[in-house]
Amino acid sequence: MSIILLMMRPEDLVGILEGANTAIVADDEYSAATFVCELATRQLAEKTVIVVYSEIKCRKIEKLLSSKAYCSGISSLLSRIPVVKVGKTNRAGFGNVVAYVEERGDLREMCGEIGSILKRLYDSKEIAFFVGFDLVSYLYSPAEIVAGMEELLTHIPEMTKFFLLTRMKRECVPVITNMFDVMIRIKRSRGFDIMAYNRVYDVFVEHSIIRELPPLPLFRIDGEKMVNIV
Image (cartoon, rainbow, N blue to C red):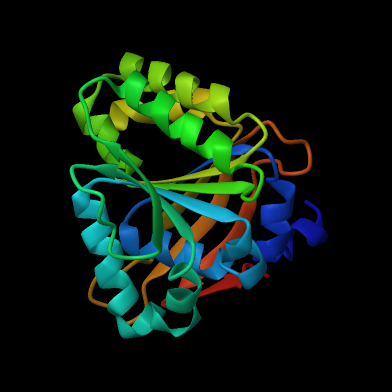
């Protein structure tokens, strides 16, 4: 295994994943948030749009940004990032809401509208982070999810896309593997102790069709920091 890959920086990972459809599947929201905060640089923020689904997820993000652990740096970056809100209201509680997509029963139609909005934004934004779409696995069937994703990706094939997913229904995991170019997993380390002060997670590539990024361990999250594994 290449020592260069083992010493990869978060910004190097973003560069390798340019133009790819990437699923970041985490055991919980704490580790997922820590991972994204480590990726968040000013340069990345300037190229990014966030698509957030549901009132529940917006409330959690707002709570997260007000917490002491994540407040430094990331809050100021997110305050200006354009947000496409999907849900029952046009309020996100963070960022700059530039478009609102009303939640509806037809997932394919909803995804088509999101895709059209992102296509218009592509001239100035090259990266899209999708947050809260793990809830879709409880509201729609796998067949509906695949149809919706196909409709969404048809509109924005060139955009780099990160889907942040936590606590998805188990039967949807094989669907994710088939739909995405890369799946990054964030799992609790074997020595994980829920009562311990430091929460430790392993970050690794579980599935990839990108030659430069084979399945391999990437980082370790130790408490509030992400570090190299060597």
